[in-house]
Every structure is written in C-alpha cells, then in structure tokens.
Image (cartoon, rainbow, N blue to C red; front, side, top):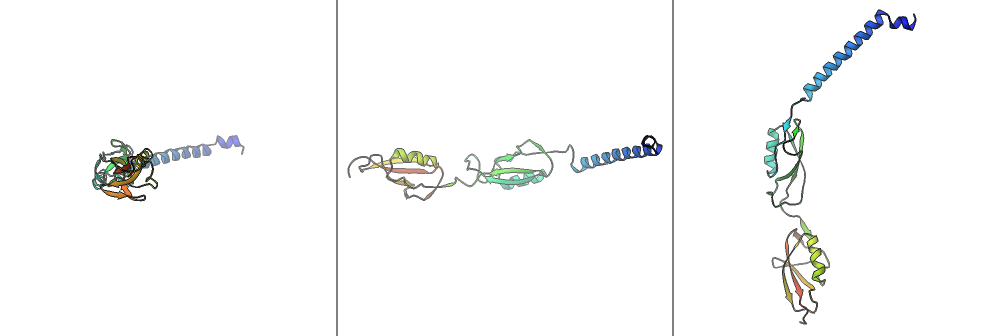
Length: 185
C-alpha cells in the first residue's frame, strides 16, 4: 500500500477525526477544571490594616479568607501605636485570590537602642555634635565649666546620669553636654 493511498483511506481519516475530537474534549474538560479549582473571577478585596494591632489584623484577614505574614519591624514610627501595622503589601483595596498572603510591617515598641560612641570626651563640640546627631541623638542643654579647653566636651549626660562610651540609649534621646569655657580653673 502506498503512502498516498494510506493517507486518503477511510480508516486513517476516521482515526484523525477521533483524535481531534478527543483533544477538543480533553481541552474543554481541563479548562472547566481550571475554572473551578482556581476560582476564576472570584477575588477578595484587601482591607486597610494600617494603624491596627497585629491581633486585630489577623482577625480581619481571617474573616476575609486571607493569610497574614509579618515581615519585620521597621524603624519606630511615633505616628502609629506600638505593635501596630505601619505598612502592608499588597496595598489596601487590591483584588487578590482567596488564601493569599498579606505581608505586613509592624511598628516596634520604641526607638532602637544606640550605643554611645567612643572618643567623644576631650573633643570639640563642633566634632561631637554631628557624631551624636548621626547616631540619632539630640543635643540638649549645654553647660559651661571652667576648663582651659574652650568648647571641649568634658561630660555627656542624659536625665542627670553621666554617660560613658558603650552605654546604650534610645534613638532620639536628648544628651546634655558639659563644655569647657576657655578659662583656667
């Protein structure tokens, strides 16, 4: 039998027709199955979680059939309560599928503790001020005492307590400085 006769035979054409019908039916069944299992066209709206405590956010997301994942706490933001959500991804109002993970960033309990750097004593105020500000501290009350070194830092204190290199204070703490006035004691 030649190839041309085989291709034009009734048996071959019938087999090709059955194969095409089988592929079409299989594709139809797979598409219907995907529509059902992926909930095609069904979305949940992401609620606004900013400013809410982590426990309240968990309840809200559970009610909306969504999952919460805490990423990390960020730098302390005094505009939000402690342990509350300050950022979320995806943003509120987004349409997402059921059981989607919502990533939240939590506000820590306070500013991070920073270490007082070494080598601030016996340096000039002009050198010490930018160093302290770079660490996130604020310069408070400046007092002058008799010392030959004019504007030389003699002592650091916070709320009346003398500070030493290596001590830890919350970022944005106020540090009072005692400086020399340039007069002999």
